[in-house]
Image (cartoon, rainbow, N blue to C red; front, side):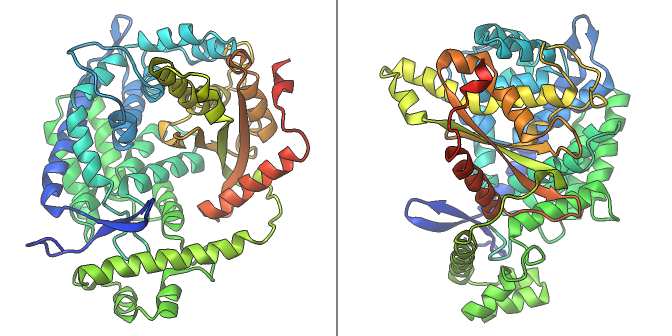
Length: 502
């Protein structure tokens, strides 16, 4: 434990050498919080004066835009994971995820989703990228690029802060939990005028845990009070932000969408025993004889956790994780039946770039290798995101707005849970919520994109349950079981996907 620090908290990470618990550097927490508040205030001030054509964007567009940009800020690798670019002012977009963020922001300002959808479906990649690059959203991206160093520092602190500080529950980071909560909240309530406000409140609902995890509701209230003092925005925009702040500060009161989404995300983060009575941290603590930690858990005493010795805290975290892993391996050794994704409220789409290494090997030069890497990331993350956004909006095959537009809804940026290493995971509505969201329809829409045909690329597209209508959540190992079963089922019948290109 660091000298002078009175609390013990850290997050479990997996390394090539095994498991490790990264301890929070409490001496940097206050400065990190100040930096986040400054950046979010600056972004709100920039958004308030943005213009589409010659007029300032309306307040509905502003809150939608701000919700997406706050997601981008807390999904730090989207902003900080790029090579450094020298020079000032405008620079070219250099990464698939910058185009993704630019599209997600620009659609609330001056980008026409149906136009980008139509261009990508027709294989006109460069035209689509140019349209995205010309958006007023570039002003926001230029600002974020100017804060690259600060954002990287914020990321280094926050990636070590667990959503739950207790050993065995500290396997998910705070930003990951807040983003997952927002994605689930969107899935629970996919309609309504206050949806962008609820999204923003969901993303920031546990922000108080950065500094004070024992009384995070008070910490969240203080965070918003400080943020509001720094805002220089119009009154109508301020009122919307105050409404979101109130929703975040009171998310534990009652049975609202944010509270329900928070509970569901926590079950996934913590591997909650309510989901499976045979798998629970307290049960494992008893099995392992870790009585000192169990005593703290039974008393629900955070001071007790704080007073654990560093080696006890870290060792118990690793031991609990390893036992959880053993239990899940036993579960995965059983052949599980394919689950009905129609009996859910939301599902998880998994997109996989098949033969990624072979594709990259076609590009031997360093410059060409960068292009190959860009294409891999773009095809598994940005392309599916744009297409799913179009499907939710009710945009038809010709790239035109259809009659089935879902009351102005759209795919939120936090729905992209992962988009690295040749695969992506995206939260989508179930067919019971949106009849177009069947695996067959999604697969057909994505794989019929002409760009895949021209590059001779094959993508695997799979769908697994995430949240049931009754509130049941599927844990990540269970989700992977389902996806793996679909992979095996498809390969035994027809591995080719080019039938959709005809």
